[in-house]
Image (cartoon, rainbow, N blue to C red):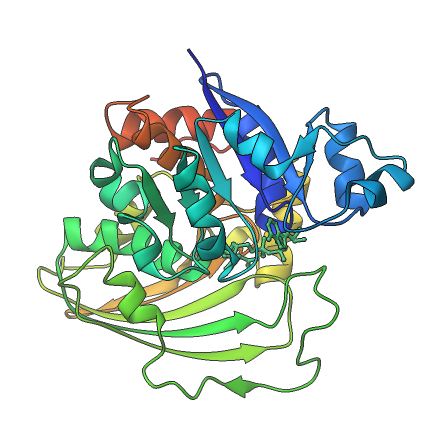
Amino acid sequence: MKVRVAVNGYGTIGKRVADAVARQPDMTLVGVAKTRPSFDAQRAIAHGYPLYVAGGGSRDAFEAAGLPVAGTVEEMVRASDVVVDAAPDKVGKENAGRYQAAGVRAIFQGGEKAEVAEVSFNALANYAQALGKQRVRVVSCNTTGIARAASVLTKGFGVDRWDVTLIRRAADPSETQRGPINGILPTFTLPSHHGPDVRTIFPDLAITTTAVVVPTTLMHVHVNHARLTRPPSDAAPVLDAFRGTRRFHIFSPWEKVDGTPQVMEFARDRGIPDMMENVLWANGLRLDGPDLYFFQAIHQESIVVPENIDAIRAMFNLAPDAATSMAITDKTLGLGPPSR
Ligand code: NAD
Protein backbone atom coordinates (compact mmCIF):
# COMPACT_ATOMS: atom_id res chain seq x y z
CA MET A 1 0.00 0.00 0.00
CA LYS A 2 1.42 3.36 -1.01
CA VAL A 3 1.09 6.34 1.32
CA ARG A 4 -1.15 9.02 -0.20
CA VAL A 5 0.61 12.39 0.01
CA ALA A 6 -0.88 15.84 -0.70
CA VAL A 7 1.12 19.07 -0.97
CA ASN A 8 -0.61 22.21 0.28
CA GLY A 9 1.21 25.31 -1.02
CA TYR A 10 2.89 24.93 -4.37
CA GLY A 11 5.72 27.48 -4.28
CA THR A 12 9.50 27.10 -3.99
CA ILE A 13 9.41 24.18 -1.55
CA GLY A 14 6.02 22.67 -2.46
CA LYS A 15 6.92 22.28 -6.15
CA ARG A 16 10.09 20.42 -5.34
CA VAL A 17 8.51 18.21 -2.69
CA ALA A 18 5.68 17.27 -5.08
CA ASP A 19 8.20 16.24 -7.76
CA ALA A 20 10.12 14.21 -5.17
CA VAL A 21 6.98 12.46 -3.87
CA ALA A 22 6.01 11.55 -7.44
CA ARG A 23 9.33 9.67 -7.75
CA GLN A 24 8.96 7.52 -4.62
CA PRO A 25 8.09 3.83 -4.99
CA ASP A 26 6.13 3.80 -1.71
CA MET A 27 4.14 7.05 -2.11
CA THR A 28 1.39 8.42 -4.36
CA LEU A 29 0.92 12.12 -5.01
CA VAL A 30 -2.78 12.90 -4.44
CA GLY A 31 -2.41 16.44 -5.73
CA VAL A 32 -1.17 19.93 -5.01
CA ALA A 33 -3.07 22.99 -3.76
CA LYS A 34 -2.51 26.58 -4.85
CA THR A 35 -4.28 29.84 -4.11
CA ARG A 36 -4.01 31.51 -7.53
CA PRO A 37 -3.44 30.58 -11.18
CA SER A 38 0.15 31.10 -12.36
CA PHE A 39 2.83 29.40 -14.43
CA ASP A 40 3.43 27.15 -11.42
CA ALA A 41 -0.19 25.96 -11.52
CA GLN A 42 0.16 25.33 -15.23
CA ARG A 43 3.29 23.29 -14.51
CA ALA A 44 1.37 21.14 -12.03
CA ILE A 45 -1.20 20.35 -14.72
CA ALA A 46 1.55 19.63 -17.27
CA HIS A 47 3.07 17.13 -14.83
CA GLY A 48 -0.31 15.43 -14.40
CA TYR A 49 -0.68 16.52 -10.75
CA PRO A 50 -4.34 17.08 -9.76
CA LEU A 51 -4.69 20.76 -8.85
CA TYR A 52 -6.81 21.85 -5.88
CA VAL A 53 -7.81 25.35 -4.77
CA ALA A 54 -6.31 26.46 -1.43
CA GLY A 55 -6.48 29.33 1.02
CA GLY A 56 -9.67 31.08 -0.14
CA GLY A 57 -8.63 31.02 -3.81
CA SER A 58 -11.28 31.02 -6.55
CA ARG A 59 -12.02 28.01 -8.73
CA ASP A 60 -13.36 30.39 -11.40
CA ALA A 61 -10.01 32.20 -11.60
CA PHE A 62 -8.20 28.91 -12.36
CA GLU A 63 -10.79 27.82 -14.91
CA ALA A 64 -10.76 31.25 -16.61
CA ALA A 65 -7.01 30.69 -17.11
CA GLY A 66 -7.76 27.32 -18.69
CA LEU A 67 -6.44 25.35 -15.70
CA PRO A 68 -8.71 22.44 -14.71
CA VAL A 69 -9.37 22.15 -10.97
CA ALA A 70 -9.78 18.80 -9.22
CA GLY A 71 -11.52 20.23 -6.14
CA THR A 72 -11.02 22.15 -2.93
CA VAL A 73 -8.13 21.78 -0.51
CA GLU A 74 -10.56 20.14 1.94
CA GLU A 75 -11.28 17.42 -0.64
CA MET A 76 -7.57 16.95 -1.24
CA VAL A 77 -6.89 16.61 2.48
CA ARG A 78 -9.67 14.04 2.92
CA ALA A 79 -8.23 11.91 0.10
CA SER A 80 -4.77 11.82 1.74
CA ASP A 81 -2.89 10.01 4.49
CA VAL A 82 -0.52 12.93 5.02
CA VAL A 83 -0.32 16.57 3.91
CA VAL A 84 3.00 18.27 3.35
CA ASP A 85 2.22 21.88 4.23
CA ALA A 86 4.45 24.18 2.19
CA ALA A 87 2.40 27.34 2.56
CA PRO A 88 4.15 30.62 3.51
CA ASP A 89 5.59 31.15 7.01
CA LYS A 90 2.96 30.96 9.78
CA VAL A 91 0.17 29.84 7.40
CA GLY A 92 0.98 26.20 8.24
CA LYS A 93 -0.12 26.83 11.81
CA GLU A 94 -3.47 28.14 10.51
CA ASN A 95 -3.83 25.04 8.34
CA ALA A 96 -2.92 22.63 11.15
CA GLY A 97 -6.43 22.49 12.63
CA ARG A 98 -7.86 21.54 9.25
CA TYR A 99 -5.56 18.52 8.99
CA GLN A 100 -6.25 17.45 12.54
CA ALA A 101 -10.03 17.77 12.04
CA ALA A 102 -9.77 15.50 9.00
CA GLY A 103 -7.70 12.96 10.95
CA VAL A 104 -4.82 13.35 8.50
CA ARG A 105 -1.15 13.52 9.45
CA ALA A 106 0.91 16.57 8.54
CA ILE A 107 4.42 17.75 7.86
CA PHE A 108 5.23 21.42 8.43
CA GLN A 109 8.20 23.47 7.26
CA GLY A 110 10.79 25.56 9.06
CA GLY A 111 8.76 28.80 8.81
CA GLU A 112 6.51 27.42 11.55
CA LYS A 113 7.33 27.41 15.24
CA ALA A 114 8.48 24.08 16.69
CA GLU A 115 5.26 23.79 18.73
CA VAL A 116 3.23 23.12 15.56
CA ALA A 117 4.51 19.52 15.58
CA GLU A 118 5.44 16.71 17.92
CA VAL A 119 9.03 16.65 16.70
CA SER A 120 11.45 18.83 14.71
CA PHE A 121 13.13 16.60 12.16
CA ASN A 122 16.37 15.97 10.36
CA ALA A 123 16.91 12.58 8.74
CA LEU A 124 20.55 12.09 9.76
CA ALA A 125 20.06 13.44 13.27
CA ASN A 126 16.78 12.06 14.65
CA TYR A 127 14.90 9.87 12.14
CA ALA A 128 13.83 7.46 14.89
CA GLN A 129 12.07 10.23 16.83
CA ALA A 130 9.59 10.69 13.96
CA LEU A 131 8.61 7.02 13.72
CA GLY A 132 4.82 6.76 13.82
CA LYS A 133 4.30 10.47 14.58
CA GLN A 134 1.21 12.46 13.48
CA ARG A 135 2.81 15.90 13.09
CA VAL A 136 6.44 16.49 12.12
CA ARG A 137 8.26 19.75 11.36
CA VAL A 138 11.12 19.66 8.86
CA VAL A 139 13.44 22.41 10.11
CA SER A 140 14.50 25.35 7.92
CA CYS A 141 17.20 25.28 5.24
CA ASN A 142 19.89 26.75 7.51
CA THR A 143 18.94 24.53 10.43
CA THR A 144 18.89 21.46 8.17
CA GLY A 145 22.41 22.28 6.97
CA ILE A 146 23.72 22.76 10.51
CA ALA A 147 21.89 19.67 11.83
CA ARG A 148 23.48 17.48 9.15
CA ALA A 149 26.95 18.80 9.98
CA ALA A 150 26.21 18.45 13.71
CA SER A 151 25.32 14.78 13.18
CA VAL A 152 28.76 14.15 11.69
CA LEU A 153 30.74 16.21 14.20
CA THR A 154 28.98 15.16 17.42
CA LYS A 155 29.13 11.49 16.48
CA GLY A 156 32.73 11.41 15.27
CA PHE A 157 34.54 13.98 17.38
CA GLY A 158 32.28 15.62 19.96
CA VAL A 159 31.64 19.36 20.00
CA ASP A 160 32.52 21.52 23.05
CA ARG A 161 31.21 24.68 21.45
CA TRP A 162 30.39 25.94 17.98
CA ASP A 163 29.96 29.41 16.49
CA VAL A 164 28.38 29.87 13.08
CA THR A 165 28.11 33.06 11.07
CA LEU A 166 25.37 32.68 8.48
CA ILE A 167 25.78 34.66 5.26
CA ARG A 168 22.18 34.51 4.09
CA ARG A 169 20.86 34.93 0.57
CA ALA A 170 18.53 37.92 0.34
CA ALA A 171 15.77 36.18 -1.63
CA ASP A 172 14.86 33.15 -3.66
CA PRO A 173 15.29 33.78 -7.42
CA SER A 174 11.55 34.26 -7.95
CA GLU A 175 11.11 36.72 -5.04
CA THR A 176 11.49 39.95 -7.01
CA GLN A 177 9.98 42.06 -4.24
CA ARG A 178 12.70 41.24 -1.68
CA GLY A 179 16.12 42.76 -1.16
CA PRO A 180 18.59 44.22 -0.57
CA ILE A 181 19.99 44.56 -4.08
CA ASN A 182 22.99 46.57 -2.86
CA GLY A 183 23.94 46.29 0.78
CA ILE A 184 24.78 43.97 3.64
CA LEU A 185 22.18 43.79 6.41
CA PRO A 186 23.20 42.60 9.88
CA THR A 187 20.53 40.62 11.71
CA PHE A 188 20.19 42.52 14.97
CA THR A 189 18.96 39.57 16.98
CA LEU A 190 22.16 38.52 18.74
CA PRO A 191 22.63 35.63 18.79
CA SER A 192 20.29 34.74 15.92
CA HIS A 193 17.32 32.35 16.19
CA HIS A 194 19.13 29.59 14.27
CA GLY A 195 21.05 28.28 17.31
CA PRO A 196 17.88 27.68 19.38
CA ASP A 197 16.30 26.10 16.31
CA VAL A 198 19.22 23.64 16.01
CA ARG A 199 18.68 22.79 19.69
CA THR A 200 15.13 21.59 18.91
CA ILE A 201 17.06 18.62 17.45
CA PHE A 202 20.31 18.71 19.48
CA PRO A 203 19.13 19.99 22.89
CA ASP A 204 22.60 19.89 24.48
CA LEU A 205 24.65 21.39 21.65
CA ALA A 206 26.56 24.54 22.71
CA ILE A 207 26.00 26.42 19.46
CA THR A 208 25.76 30.16 18.86
CA THR A 209 24.74 31.70 15.56
CA THR A 210 24.78 35.18 14.05
CA ALA A 211 23.58 36.23 10.60
CA VAL A 212 23.93 38.84 7.88
CA VAL A 213 21.87 39.10 4.67
CA VAL A 214 23.68 39.71 1.37
CA PRO A 215 22.44 40.50 -2.16
CA THR A 216 22.44 37.07 -3.77
CA THR A 217 19.85 34.43 -4.60
CA LEU A 218 22.45 31.64 -4.92
CA MET A 219 22.64 29.76 -1.62
CA HIS A 220 23.55 30.60 1.97
CA VAL A 221 27.15 30.19 3.18
CA HIS A 222 27.98 29.26 6.78
CA VAL A 223 31.30 30.22 8.34
CA ASN A 224 31.91 27.67 11.09
CA HIS A 225 34.26 27.53 14.06
CA ALA A 226 33.76 24.43 16.21
CA ARG A 227 35.90 23.37 19.16
CA LEU A 228 36.06 19.58 19.08
CA THR A 229 36.06 17.40 22.19
CA ARG A 230 38.10 14.58 20.62
CA PRO A 231 40.07 16.26 17.82
CA PRO A 232 42.06 14.02 15.47
CA SER A 233 45.71 14.84 14.86
CA ASP A 234 44.98 16.39 11.48
CA ALA A 235 41.99 17.48 9.37
CA ALA A 236 41.85 14.40 7.11
CA PRO A 237 39.56 12.29 9.36
CA VAL A 238 37.10 15.19 9.63
CA LEU A 239 36.98 15.64 5.87
CA ASP A 240 36.62 11.87 5.45
CA ALA A 241 33.71 11.83 7.91
CA PHE A 242 31.89 14.45 5.84
CA ARG A 243 32.82 12.67 2.58
CA GLY A 244 31.55 9.36 3.89
CA THR A 245 28.12 10.71 4.84
CA ARG A 246 25.08 11.00 2.56
CA ARG A 247 24.01 14.49 1.56
CA PHE A 248 27.45 16.04 1.72
CA HIS A 249 29.28 17.07 -1.42
CA ILE A 250 32.94 18.02 -1.07
CA PHE A 251 34.63 19.97 -3.86
CA SER A 252 38.38 19.58 -4.44
CA PRO A 253 40.58 22.54 -5.42
CA TRP A 254 41.17 21.17 -8.96
CA GLU A 255 37.44 21.45 -9.67
CA LYS A 256 37.76 25.24 -9.59
CA VAL A 257 34.54 25.83 -7.71
CA ASP A 258 35.26 29.31 -6.37
CA GLY A 259 31.88 29.80 -4.75
CA THR A 260 28.13 29.43 -5.02
CA PRO A 261 27.79 30.35 -8.75
CA GLN A 262 29.88 27.34 -9.78
CA VAL A 263 28.06 25.12 -7.28
CA MET A 264 24.73 25.86 -8.94
CA GLU A 265 26.28 25.48 -12.40
CA PHE A 266 27.62 22.07 -11.29
CA ALA A 267 24.11 21.09 -10.15
CA ARG A 268 22.53 22.13 -13.45
CA ASP A 269 25.22 20.31 -15.42
CA ARG A 270 24.54 17.04 -13.61
CA GLY A 271 20.89 17.29 -14.66
CA ILE A 272 19.38 18.32 -11.31
CA PRO A 273 18.78 22.07 -11.13
CA ASP A 274 19.16 21.91 -7.34
CA MET A 275 21.91 21.16 -4.81
CA MET A 276 20.24 19.16 -2.05
CA GLU A 277 23.51 18.27 -0.35
CA ASN A 278 25.58 20.36 2.10
CA VAL A 279 28.47 21.72 0.05
CA LEU A 280 31.95 21.83 1.55
CA TRP A 281 35.32 22.63 0.06
CA ALA A 282 38.33 20.42 0.83
CA ASN A 283 40.51 23.52 0.99
CA GLY A 284 37.82 25.31 3.03
CA LEU A 285 38.29 23.11 6.10
CA ARG A 286 41.14 23.45 8.58
CA LEU A 287 41.91 21.94 11.93
CA ASP A 288 44.10 23.89 14.35
CA GLY A 289 44.47 21.82 17.54
CA PRO A 290 40.88 21.34 18.75
CA ASP A 291 39.59 24.22 16.59
CA LEU A 292 37.82 23.25 13.39
CA TYR A 293 37.12 25.91 10.78
CA PHE A 294 35.02 25.18 7.71
CA PHE A 295 32.71 26.78 5.18
CA GLN A 296 29.54 25.14 3.97
CA ALA A 297 27.05 26.30 1.35
CA ILE A 298 23.35 25.51 1.57
CA HIS A 299 20.93 25.66 -1.36
CA GLN A 300 17.92 27.16 0.38
CA GLU A 301 15.40 26.14 -2.29
CA SER A 302 16.10 22.41 -2.17
CA ILE A 303 18.03 21.17 0.86
CA VAL A 304 14.86 20.31 2.80
CA VAL A 305 13.32 18.29 -0.05
CA PRO A 306 14.90 14.90 0.77
CA GLU A 307 14.17 15.46 4.46
CA ASN A 308 10.44 15.87 3.71
CA ILE A 309 10.47 12.49 1.97
CA ASP A 310 12.33 10.79 4.83
CA ALA A 311 9.92 12.36 7.33
CA ILE A 312 6.98 10.74 5.52
CA ARG A 313 8.77 7.38 5.59
CA ALA A 314 9.42 7.67 9.31
CA MET A 315 5.84 8.70 10.14
CA PHE A 316 4.43 5.67 8.30
CA ASN A 317 7.18 3.23 9.27
CA LEU A 318 8.01 2.67 5.60
CA ALA A 319 11.69 2.19 6.41
CA PRO A 320 13.18 0.89 9.66
CA ASP A 321 15.98 3.43 9.92
CA ALA A 322 17.43 6.61 8.48
CA ALA A 323 20.03 4.81 6.37
CA THR A 324 17.39 2.73 4.56
CA SER A 325 15.09 5.69 3.93
CA MET A 326 17.87 8.05 2.86
CA ALA A 327 19.23 5.48 0.41
CA ILE A 328 15.83 5.19 -1.32
CA THR A 329 15.27 8.94 -1.31
CA ASP A 330 18.71 9.77 -2.65
CA LYS A 331 18.53 7.16 -5.42
CA THR A 332 15.14 8.40 -6.63
CA LEU A 333 16.28 12.03 -6.54
CA GLY A 334 19.52 11.32 -8.40
CA LEU A 335 21.79 12.12 -5.46
CA GLY A 336 24.93 10.03 -5.33
CA PRO A 337 25.97 7.64 -2.55
CA PRO A 338 28.70 8.93 -0.21
CA SER A 339 31.96 9.34 -2.10
CA ARG A 340 34.22 7.31 0.21
P1 NAD B 1 6.54 30.27 -1.36
O1 NAD B 1 5.99 31.63 -1.09
O2 NAD B 1 7.52 30.09 -2.46
O3 NAD B 1 5.34 29.26 -1.61
C1 NAD B 1 4.20 29.21 -0.80
C2 NAD B 1 3.00 28.81 -1.66
O4 NAD B 1 1.86 28.66 -0.82
C3 NAD B 1 2.66 29.84 -2.72
O5 NAD B 1 2.38 29.15 -3.92
C4 NAD B 1 1.39 30.49 -2.16
O6 NAD B 1 0.54 30.94 -3.19
C5 NAD B 1 0.75 29.31 -1.43
N1 NAD B 1 -0.20 29.72 -0.38
C6 NAD B 1 -0.46 30.94 0.13
N2 NAD B 1 -1.41 30.87 1.08
C7 NAD B 1 -1.77 29.57 1.18
C8 NAD B 1 -2.72 28.86 1.98
N3 NAD B 1 -3.49 29.49 2.87
N4 NAD B 1 -2.80 27.52 1.82
C9 NAD B 1 -2.03 26.87 0.94
N5 NAD B 1 -1.14 27.51 0.14
C10 NAD B 1 -1.00 28.83 0.26
O7 NAD B 1 7.14 29.79 0.04
P2 NAD B 1 8.33 28.75 0.24
O8 NAD B 1 9.62 29.48 0.11
O9 NAD B 1 8.09 27.55 -0.57
O10 NAD B 1 8.18 28.45 1.80
C11 NAD B 1 7.25 27.49 2.28
C12 NAD B 1 7.69 27.04 3.66
O11 NAD B 1 8.98 26.41 3.54
C13 NAD B 1 7.86 28.14 4.70
O12 NAD B 1 7.56 27.63 5.97
C14 NAD B 1 9.33 28.45 4.61
O13 NAD B 1 9.85 29.04 5.79
C15 NAD B 1 9.90 27.07 4.40
N6 NAD B 1 11.22 27.04 3.77
C16 NAD B 1 11.53 27.88 2.75
C17 NAD B 1 12.79 27.86 2.21
C18 NAD B 1 13.19 28.80 1.12
O14 NAD B 1 14.34 29.23 1.10
N7 NAD B 1 12.34 29.15 0.20
C19 NAD B 1 13.74 26.94 2.66
C20 NAD B 1 13.37 26.03 3.67
C21 NAD B 1 12.11 26.11 4.23
